[in-house]
Image 1 (cartoon, rainbow, N blue to C red):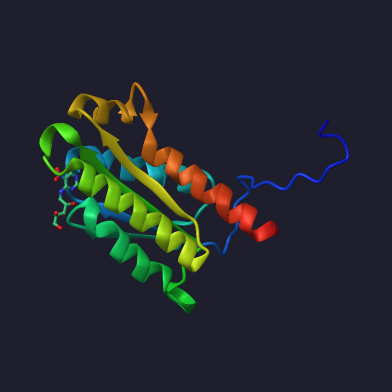
Image 2: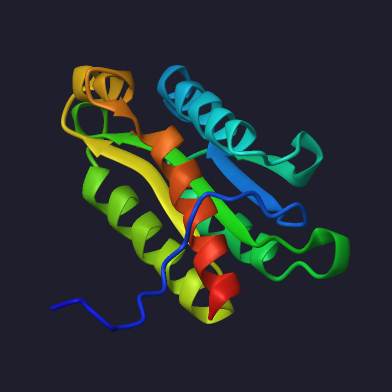
Length: 161
Ligand code: INI
């Protein structure tokens, strides 16, 4: 069925010029620092030079969309080909979980669409701290590493269309 069609997809071949921004929330730092390590590790292992990765820190996940919007507006040397948002919103420790989680996810997708740039959602939302630990480099992998891979694939795909 797929014979003779043109399939266009991204790959993980490094693009020497691509620049990646990572915006990281400090809230739940213990978890989020593992996501950050994972994201940087993914990018570096796939050939992205350290000088092409910028990390910006914000207080909490709720602040991520604004800083990512500023990053997406960057031009020249401050232009990013993809931006990764990293944070951890844990229901157990916040009464306004739904608000913080919902608003940050909505904000990220709106910036991505507005600027036609991949904004990768690496904000984990869990019921418990244990689940967050599982997604930050233990049983359930590292969502930061996955976000790094998604960013590379999307930069590659966008360069082909
Ligand atoms: N920010 C998070 O990144 N994760 C959380 O779990 C969280 N909790 O628990 O409330 C959280 N709150 C802070 C929020 O992101 C803002 O920094 C704050 O509301 C100030 O705007």
